[in-house]
Image (cartoon, rainbow, N blue to C red):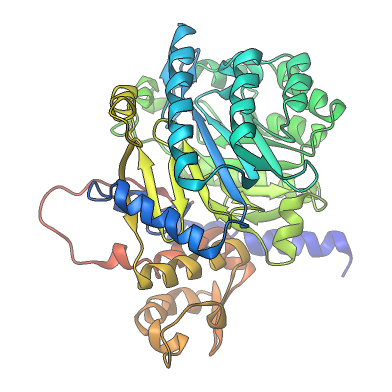
Length: 475
C-alpha cells in the first residue's frame, strides 16, 4: 500500500460518523484527574505547603512549569469560556501586576529561589494586553527568582490575539524569550466573525504567523473552532485551506461548547444560528480529511501537528504529556500557576486561585497565597490519573506503568472498569489484554469516552439536589 493510500485508510478508520453519532455524550476533557469540578474549598494553604514540601523531599533538581494568567481583554468574544476581564482601562493591568509580583514572592519563599523552569506559558485573557515594558518587567521578575533552562531545551509560549500585535511586536516577544506562539483564529469567514464579535482579517493573522518564522520561533500553533454560529461545511473549508497553506506547526480544532448558563458571554449568541449536530459532524470530518491529507499527524482529542514538530515527536516515542494547557512535551513537570483563577498541579495535588480580582487581591492583602480550592489525591486517584493520562496521550495503557498495590494485578484492580469497556471493545474501539488496554484507530476520536470508564467520580452514587452538567460533548 502506498503512503497516500495508507493515510486515506487511516483517516477513514479514524472518522466513523455513524459510530460518533452513536457514542457522543457529555464528558470531561481530562486536563486533570480528578477533574476541576471535584476541587473543594476545604483544600487550603497547609495542603499546598505539604505539596511543595513533597517536591523538596524529592530534591530541587526537578524543573518546574510556570503558568501566568493575564485576564484582560480589550473586547469580548461571545464564544469564550475563559476567565477574563473586558476593559479598556490600562491602569487595571498595572494594579494587577503589582499583586502578581507579591504572589510570585510568596511562591518563591515556599519553593526557594533559583528553581529551574523548563516550561513557561502565558495565557488569558489576552497576555499581549500588557505593554512591552510591562512584559519586560514581569519576565525580569521571573528570571530573578527562577533559573530558566536554555532556549533550545525549554518551551516558553504565549497566547496571541493577532488583532493586538504587529509583526514588529512578534520580534519583541522573541527577544523577550518566548519561543512558541499560539494564535487564536477560530474562523476567517466574515459573517461568522461578526456573529461572535471577533473580526480579524486573514492578512492580520498570516502576517503574524510569517513574522514568527522570520524571528525564529520554534513552533507556531493555530486555534480553530467549529460549531460557531453561521458556520457550515462550505464556509469553513476556505479557512482550513488558508491555514494549511500557511503551514503552522500545530493546529487545534475545537468543538464549540455552547453552555450559556456557565458562560454569560455566550448568551449574546443567537442559538438559532448554531449549526446542527450533523453539520458539526461533517465539519469535523472535513477538518480531519484536510489536515491529515496535508501531512499533519493526529495527536489526540482536537490536536494535529506536523511530523517534525516536538509534539508529534513526543507522541511517536510515547513521551507526550497533558496538562491544563492541553498536550505538551513538558507537562510532567510540577506546574506552579500564578494569577487570578490559575490552577497549579504540584505533587499529588491541584490548587486553584481565587476566580475574581476582588477575592484575589483580598487574599494577597491579607498576606496569604490566593488559593480558593483544590484537592489532594489519594492513592487510587494517582493510579487513575496515570491510567487516564497514558490513554489520552499514547492510546495505550500498560499495567506495568501504574503504581498498583503490591500483589494486585491490573485486571484485578480494574475489574469493574474493564466490564464498562466491554461494549466499546465489541464496537472495535479498543483491545483489552492481560497486560493492558490498546486503543485502536477507530477509538481515538472517542478517547474521552474510554477514559470515562476509569473515572471513579463519574460513577459515584448520585447525591440529592440539583446536578450541574459542566462537561462538553465528547465529539
